[in-house]
Length: 199
Image: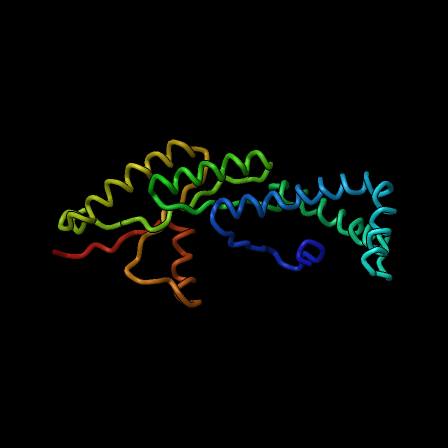
C-alpha cells in the first residue's frame, strides 16, 4: 500500500540487525526472480498442479487464478525494486557504535547495499562518551572507554571519508517519549556539545 499510494513525504523503516536487514532488502529481488522463473514454467506445471489439487480433493482450485494473482503482484515488486535503487527516493542510514563488531557489521552492510545498488552515505555513531576531558580523566573506566571509542571512531572516519558521519552521545537515561526523542533528534542536525561541569 505504501508503494502504491506514496501518501507520505518520508517513510522510515527501522530495520533489525544486519543479517535480517539484508534479507529484507534482497526480498523484492528474490521474489521478482522467482516469479519470473515460475511464469516461464507455468504452462508446463499448471496441468500437474490442477491434477494434484483434484487428487487431494480441492475441487475449486484453479492454477490460472493463482497465476493471475501472482502476475498482478509482479509490477508492484518491480516498482519496489526500482524505488529501492533510486537515490532520489531511497537512502539507507547505517547506525553503529564505536566497537569492533559493530564496525565489522557496518562495513558488511555498506558492501551489500552497494551490491544491491541502494544509496547509502550516512553513518550514525551512537552511544559515544562525549564528555569534557576533565570529567573523563577522573574516571578510569571512562578514560578506557573513550580510548576504545576514539580508536574505532578514527577507523570509521578513515573508512567512510566520503560519508556524512553523525556522532551521538551516550546519555545517563533512556530516550523515551515524544519530547525526549524530539530533543535528542536535534543532535542529528547540529553536533552534540557536552556541558562542562565546574570542578
